[in-house]
Structure formats: C-alpha cells, structure tokens
Image 1 (cartoon, rainbow, N blue to C red):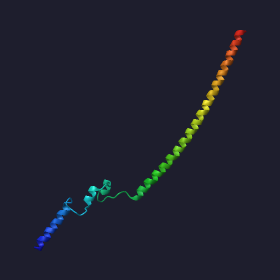
Image 2 (image 1 turned 180 degrees about the vertical axis):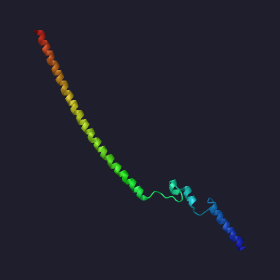
Image 3 (image 1 turned 45 degrees about the horizontal axis):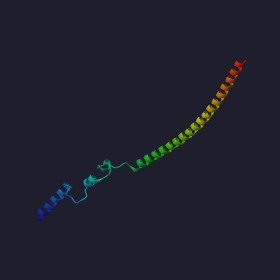
Image 4 (image 1 turned 135 degrees about the horizontal axis):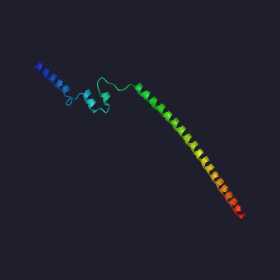
Length: 117
C-alpha cells in the first residue's frame, strides 16, 4: 500500500512539473511566459549585456551630446556672423543707392545745362 501511495504521489508531482499550467510551483517557464523582459534575457543560457557595455554606450552618448552642443554653438556663432554681414551689406546697398541717385541727379543737371547752351 505504501508503494502504491508513494508511486501515486510521485506521479502527481511528475505530472505537476510536466504540466506547468496546473502547477502551483513557480517555474522558470511560467515566469518567462509573463515576463516583460526582452526575449534574449529570457532564453536559458543567455544573459543580458554586461553593465560595462551599457556604461560604454552612455559614455559614447555623452560624448556625442557634447559634440552636438559644440556644433550648435558654432552654428549659432556662424549665424550671428552671417546676420552681421547681411546688415553691413544692406547698409552698403543703401549708401550705393544714395550715391546712384546723387549721380543721376548730377547727370540730369549737366544735361539740362547742355541744353541751355
């Protein structure tokens, strides 16, 4: 009787592990089934990337951010220089227009004087 009881108990335990849906024990496959972790970390034998690689990626990102910020500062400086140059060019254009009007006025006066002669 003891052997039958032991065999039945072993069979029940074996069935429980073979069929994890009915199992009350937390099994790896059940935990994996409900896990939010990426698949590579769920696979047996594989582990998530080491922390050092994450640190290296963070360092690269920070370096890239510094480089981008440096480039932004350089671009802003160039934009300010371009704006300054545009203002100077506009000022020169206004002066040139004034000079052209003055020259045209003088030419007109000279033509008028020539006509009078």
